[in-house]
Picture 1 (cartoon, one colour):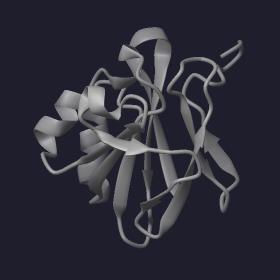
Picture 2 (tube, rainbow, N blue to C red):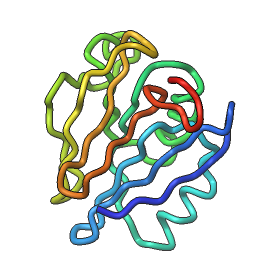
Picture 3 (spheres, rainbow, N blue to C red):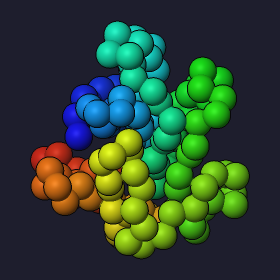
Length: 140
C-alpha cells in the first residue's frame, strides 16, 4: 500500500490518500482537506479513486465529502454503522475488511473520542489510520 498525506482544514487535520500500487485503486481516509491538491495528485499518478473511509462523523473530518461526490459520482463512502443511515453512506462494523485494490484494511471500532469512531488497520504494512482517536502531540 502506498500513502500520501495532505494537511489542512480545521486544526490542521490530515487526509490520507491510500492506494494499491498493483491495481491503482485508491481511497481517501477522512476528506478533511480541500480537494484540489488531492485530485491533482490522483490525476498525476493515474489512480482510480473509488472509496472514502470516514474515521468519525465530526464535521471537520467530513467537510469535503460533497466535493468528492461531485467529482467522483460513483464513489463509495464508508462510515460507522451507527451513523450510516444519518448520512446515507455504507456502514462499517468492527473487524470488517475493506479492500483497496489488492490491499486490505481492517475496521476497528474505537469509541472514545466520539461514539462512532473507527480506526483502519493495515496489518501487512504495520500501520493504522486513527482519525482523532490519537492526536499528534496530545490526547485524542
